[in-house]
Amino acid sequence: MAEITKVKPGTLTDFGNGFYHIRGSFKLGGILDLGTHCALVELADGRFVFLDSYTLDDELKAKVDALTDNGRKIAAIVNLHPFHTLHCEWMAKAYPDAKLYGTKRHHEKFPDLRWESDTCEAGALDGLFGDALQFSVPQGVHMVCEDENVHFSSVLAYHRPSGTIFVDDTLSCIKAPFPLSLLPITGKLAFHPTLAKALEPNPYAADAFREWAIRMAQDWADARRIATAHNTTMTFASGEFPEKVGAALGQVAGVLQKHRDRPAQA
Image 1 (cartoon, rainbow, N blue to C red):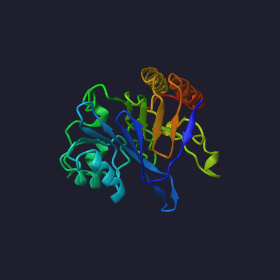
Image 2: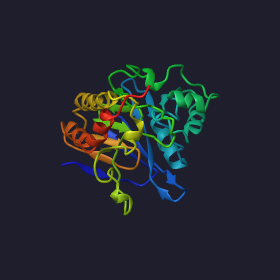
Image 3: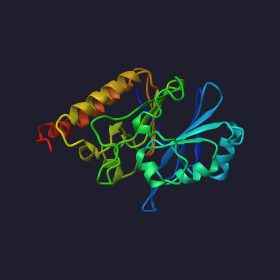
Image 4: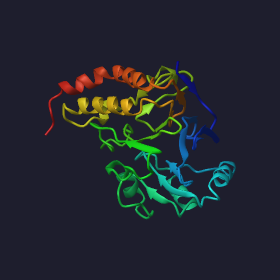
């Protein structure tokens, strides 16, 4: 049976086999802390990769620097969500020798940072870190929508040695008090509630998205946990992840069918 855990911001958790998860703080309206995250991943050759950016306090930075020879072993910083941008500049400056990867929106928002030329959603990460890290880009949905309040899409990462999936908003699971406890992403693994607005404007997008989700779940069926940005980690038995994704697809079946039934836009 799946277990959902929530730790306080500022916590570094060793998931084993070279995956270190960092839980951060993100306050909505400066009051309600929804949480955010990043991760430090050790590669087979002893180098490290950051998944997403976060401004580390002195205690967290000391722990990261102890693992990475004061940052000298950090090979890359990989920013996976086009709208998770608050901490990009800090991390790029804190570890200036690391190669910096981001989505097209990252490049546009911070043109003065030294980005690698290819973007994350365009295949820049494919095979870049060997077998340790795999990446998946959702299909049938916009990576960046015209409505910038829609934050559905992000690039998902899987660290097979630790069985850890790292995801920002595309898949979510939160533990929260009332009234947030009423949200469909509370207490279960679910697709972000903005899916309907993120789907591409053609009736085939719904099936493209569903097929991507099934394929991703099958490819990563041996995962043992999923770390979500806001604000929990869910652990489960090996082979259970496809069932969780199937249940999440069931929750949005009506959304997908409604999209199939709409006329295509020119």
